[in-house]
Picture: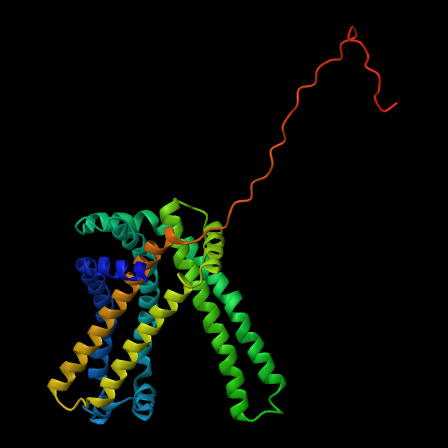
Length: 314
């Protein structure tokens, strides 16, 4: 827990880093949001039906709009997919700079040094991302496959509620396994940073052994971060239900709430990487097994002139 508090203090002292990452995230969001807004404004034909979306999602309004203006919106959806991939790449790209920042907590944040750290580690972290994705798809996806097969096999014997609980159990196993593997991947980033490791598979395997030997300090803290993020989303949804957007003031309040949630998500990501960096030196490692080294004995040639001693057992 001391590592969690220490990394949180370092995160608070890195406010310029947080604002930089938030600004980039906001810019990516505006690249997608502004064309969508202009397209909706041109295609709504002064319809008042969209005002119903202010107080909650209405699928009827959305389906009618997509049926009438689907061709105009389809290119924007494609742009949104590419922006999603860009955001995923940037999340990998920023990891090196964030860890470099936590390795120098006493120094003032330097944006040039941050970008240098990002560029230096992006190659090995992209390889690590591929390894982590492979393990998540194979290791965690197997639970979804097993759950689907079991649901099909017992579909005639169970009600919809029973099938729902079967699916919920296997989805929970999928989520637990996926988060465990993602935690290993993040700890592997720290290992590659601290140990200057270049092998993605080797770093992932070493990080996996550390996580399994220290679950409380690693995946336990990772799940705690997930719970904090989930709590923030829950708080936002409660505000969304309580505040009816029927004027400019309430719209502004919800906009500020949304941006606060985005900023908090950025802070949680930075905080977790800092926690992993701080925890790594304290993790209990496997005790190396010392192999006995054979001792070579010098062999002396027999002396023919030495007297032969009688065997005492005779």
